Length: 178
Image (tube, rainbow, N blue to C red; front, top):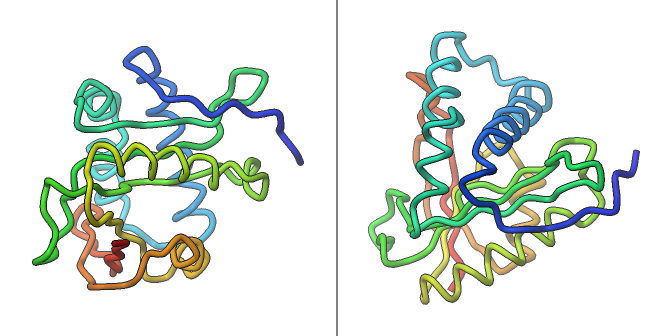
């Protein structure tokens, strides 16, 4: 089902509630429905509240070191987003003076329409201006499709780490682009 036309735009503080809801929905579609990761319910609840709760998202939107963009359908629904800021990955060559693409997600209904590409273009352009030097991202080790997308954009695997979802640990790859 096509949901075009879409508008790509940078979000601001007034978008907090809608972005929080989108982040939660995209995470659930990707990891619970799509990859069927059996996160323990208590770990999942804690992670979702900490990562996608309104207070967290509002804090990110208020922080000038961060930027987020959304794809918005003609009817006003937010269907995809990207979030970027200072690098926080646990790699010996990474620093907060370098940029990181934290998240790039599209709801299932928005996939295959160029939305991810447009959001990545916006995020990478902003990161190049805000954080000159290498760019970083973390990607779940089981998400081969995302890894292929990032490889086409010049990112290469340079490390691994454990990403915490509550007390559950996901194996993640660290990717860098010079």
